[in-house]
Image 1 (cartoon, rainbow, N blue to C red):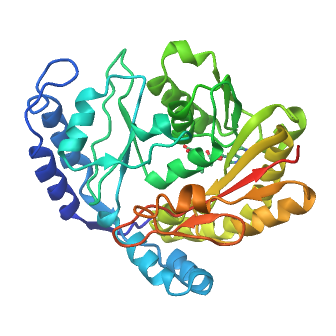
Image 2: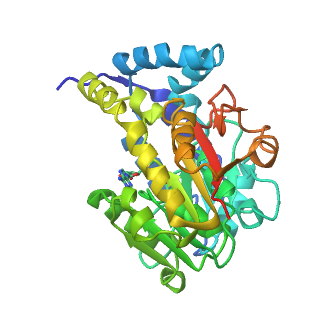
Length: 372
Ligand SMILES: C[S@@+](CC[C@H](N)C(=O)[O-])C[C@H]1O[C@@H](n2cnc3c(N)ncnc32)[C@H](O)[C@@H]1O
């Protein structure tokens, strides 16, 4: 099958210059970063960072039609960002269960800063999430046998559903669609729940999830974290009313990666499958609301701009739960973080739209409180 590949030397060059500018300082094990870690990281970027795919015309055309209608002028600037991977920003979530003093110093010296204001809800996350105003990609964390990973790289907008979930120590939490586990790791950075059930029906993705949890959580916490393999649509029946908080980070059209589908057939297949997603998402959200106790909280999130997979899903589900309430996230999340994120307020939630200089997203989130 033919793949459209073009070389993108800019990414690799920028990264290498940035990496070379690290000051020479001792790593966590006392060795010099400049000598050991940097050398292997440079080799890694030489081998992996050179190629970049062109956008898939079928997906781009489809998005152009739908999103210019839904987002108006905002789509042109969002489109420009989505089509320009070298402009994408990356967030770094530190792992509070590992030793992070040295890595924090490196982040600060490179111009990264803590993203979250210090509030009750984000007190722990405040010290653990770093972003940079420019598109600098921190290298992937290395695996060191017997040691936890020090950080997780992510689109910083992925943290917003976790913030909205407001997990407190002692909560029973369900991460209904959990692999590869980024939000599960973030939940464990934000509080110490009594139970975090990470559910993922796809066996390969579940293996990936298990590895993520093992790489980031100490053995002492593992008794609180379990992995399950159910179809999320049935958990609302089998575990009705059991959880305090449920996160539905739903399977969705992942706009960023779909635009860069590896070939046109894959892109077209995704567009065909797209039509079935709102029904699956509606069933998952219904199941989640049934799985929380009276007064419990469900956060629904996707990484697409599509209103059919966002507000329309929430609206459909609310018809079955007329006493459940959608809570505003505008004052709590959108306004305090407007320095970093371009956020709009479509019906029933908030939507982070990638924009030049604020390339985070897409990310839709909605918080629903079940009736007490
Ligand atoms: C957007 S991803 C989740 C990302 C994850 N929350 C994270 O932050 O790393 C959606 C996940 O839902 C899973 N999924 C698909 N169908 C599902 C179902 N019926 N029940 C539960 N999960 C499902 C997919 O396999 C995929 O891993």
